[in-house]
Length: 313
Ligand SMILES: Cc1cc2nc3c(=O)[nH]c(=O)nc-3n(C[C@H](O)[C@H](O)[C@H](O)COP(=O)(O)OP(=O)(O)OC[C@H]3O[C@@H](n4cnc5c(N)ncnc54)[C@H](O)[C@@H]3O)c2cc1C
Image 1: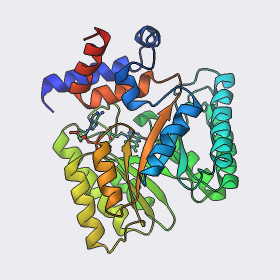
Image 2: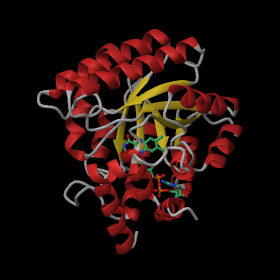
Image 3: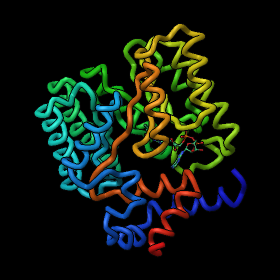
């Protein structure tokens, strides 16, 4: 990443937290083509239509009911209820074999005063509903100020729901150690590069460093006894994962690739056609701003598409 791209990325990631920009953007119809590319809709029905279309192409899904940085217990309860409804609909429509859910603990109240207990209680309810429906939950990872709390909640969830999954971000200096701790039997860990603006004290800053760290972490997870979920669109990372899987005798289905809805869709289908397990992260809901801006920050070209769409060109 050159310094201009770095500046742009940090400005965009700050925009993800800006209430004013969010209020302006939310006045745009979500149907604006650029947002639609990453967020298939605002309703459960639109989300499930996307999940069914992915399943028809042999792709699994992880559904994110969009929301983060919840500011009241009432809002946290609304998010929990949204997930319970998604799980009920997945069960009713016979989709629990193909789709699970991804949750953010700040959406469930983690950032509120004394919010840890609240987020844990809500996450437990979601895990219980997922387990009864025959599917799983993965706890997303947010910025580094939430890492310890998130891994702590995950450990508690896993006591009752051992298949509750977690996420580790290769850009954090601590993550190789976390991978070692979480590479045990049945441990479902998604490895991603990391999507937040993080300071040099806690995170690698250059693309090369992050890539090197990603491969080192993937090696630990793939060599381990758990179920690694390799979340990346980067062709170099995908090739490295394939090599590591071969080296450690991992059969397709004993690990999975994960990608985001709308990004490298052809690659998702190519891997699935080769017999690999591939899961697509499918976000839906009205609170798409933070998610959407992180996708713009990952790729400056997306910002140009977005600005052109805004200007009607
Ligand atoms: C399933 C899944 C779950 C995730 N969960 C989390 C999480 O819980 N916490 C977290 O911090 N991060 C999460 N991420 C985001 C992740 O940390 C990265 O920010 C993101 O995946 C981009 O990194 P990359 O590995 O794809 O590599 P990059 O080097 O960013 O991208 C490689 C190539 O992929 C394509 N590409 C990547 N991003 C985009 C984009 N936005 N638009 C268009 N093309 C793109 C481009 O062709 C690019 O050259 C998740 C990612 C995935 C795939």
